[in-house]
Image (cartoon, rainbow, N blue to C red; front, side):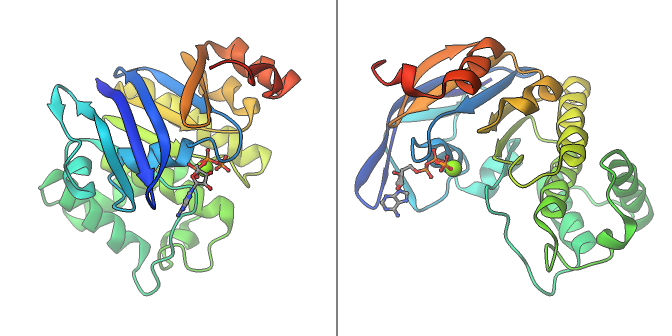
Length: 245
Ligand SMILES: Nc1ncnc2c1ncn2[C@@H]1O[C@H](COP(=O)(O)OP(=O)(O)OP(=O)(O)O)[C@@H](O)[C@H]1O
Ligand SMILES: [Mg+2]
């Protein structure tokens, strides 16, 4: 289980997260929604130990071990994966080489180039990623949607226990949206992953099939429920939640 306990986080000395508690079990999908600036990316970044975010109190516990003070690579080794809202470009690093490095770093095992290519090609097929994309440098000149697909490819290769996807749906066309979130749901089931997805759009939920929907507002989780909560937001926006505190 990934357990977030009364987490308070500062950015540039300003308190952004004001006590977040959330438990995510393996095999569960949680969706996090909330107005712009409510702190969703701050939570995602804090979970992945982004050094710009200072945890001032509370803890993050992964399978009963306290990971609050671990850095990003230590957390990744323990089975966390984060896809960023704005994926980075790494010019000059071929995509396949990057993925293989990430794989050996995470698993601590080596894999033959042939076996690795086979693994990549299987996932690429499921995600409808063109072979020509795999031969290029990481994210260099990739379209927004292509970057998102490559992130999901990276996730599948690293085989994490828990995955945090921050606005993976933004900028995706309807076909890519369906392909990606159906795939996430499929590997969540087959690998029994725990998933936390940050999104503004309830349209992904029919593919993702979340167990829980949480609403963040001004650095706090103000409401939790099922898919119906996302439908409510789609219809009425966040205004009805304004006074919940
Ligand atoms: N460097 C910074 N200095 C001060 N405040 C910051 C800094 N970075 C982020 N913030 C503030 O932290 C708050 C939370 O930002 P965050 O990116 O977590 O929101 P979000 O919920 O992900 O929003 P969105 O839906 O727009 O992605 C915002 O008010 C933002 O302005
Ligand atoms: Mg954000």
